[in-house]
Length: 104
Image (cartoon, rainbow, N blue to C red):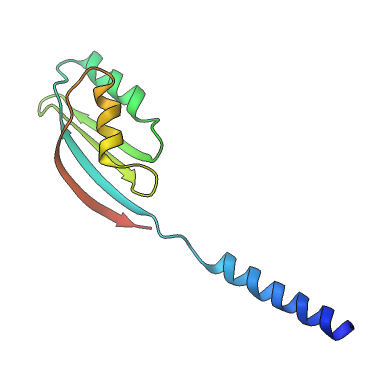
């Protein structure tokens, strides 16, 4: 009986060590949207609202180019959800580029 308990504990220990050692691969992507933002208030509105969407890692805007660039975790969101978030604020959101940024 003692041998069985020791063997079961050893198996449990090995299984938990393997689980802890396995790392989840995060794929970060960057999408750039062409928008119709035209002033600092528009820019602020987008930054304050879209930055807190699930999966958003980084967000930047360019008034001159009228673009919104978002680095996001592909496992948590996608370009359609992010575009919907921008559109819900009253702005257009046309994808210019969507590229893989890195794997972590």
